[in-house]
Picture: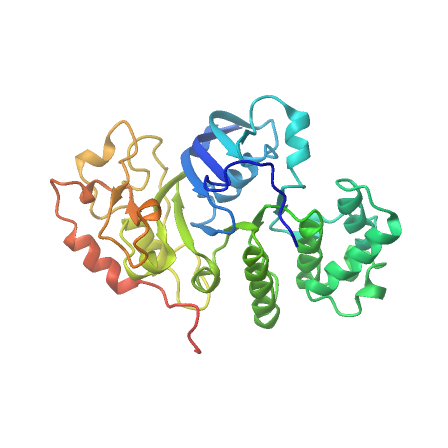
Length: 356
């Protein structure tokens, strides 16, 4: 696999997101699903986005390429720049050339993402030929190779099967094959390993790692901290439509520092996430979004804006551009965060290499 290049400066991030805001209109009012999200992703980097259901992870990723359903959703602010090109500048034709080609999505429910009236081969071949001028025969050969690569047995015959003839795990692998058909520079994967058993999960993790070794970047949404620990370079923790903590995975796991991150990790038993472990209150749209749930909340948490990202102690990576930071007033100069840090040290989740 070779990633596509446009001649942009390779020292610059592949993707840069600034102050992204997406609102969703409901009968009960406006939901601030994405509320001031900023981050960047480098070429070949694997970035994880974690948080409980409803925190805004999927809407954030769908907003990047403008595939959120509009209405009821509306991207109301922010910029998304991919390889030096603005994606939300009103040029829908230019965006379509990037969407599915240079930026590909794997969606959370593969059975719904696949068209039930076409064979899986037809769908992979379409994904190839829509972006490349190749013969149907050559596209079919590539489709078979893609099915083999994602672990579909007897790919030569199964290419002519329909989606309903595949299990959930097999359908997920087909969805990954379709996403890889155009050899994207950035793959956005929403829970790609959820519907598969641990053996297939390990194979898919290895495949994703191989693809990033070849230059592809990966933005991974997942609830599975074992996948994060074994695959992700850098992790972002999301709550209430905002990112509250971010940093190298090894540092965030060793020292979860935002009170929400600690609560999220505490809800994880090392093998699977538990059900919601306390009643969720209404999420504020100003200040710290977690303050109504936070045992450490003070008046300063209710300010007009989200608290700034404060750097924590230098992590093990030593990368000044990717340091461990948390959006919490306790890491400002005038407050003592020792009590929070001591709490976080107790609830850090297990790593991905444990044998138990």
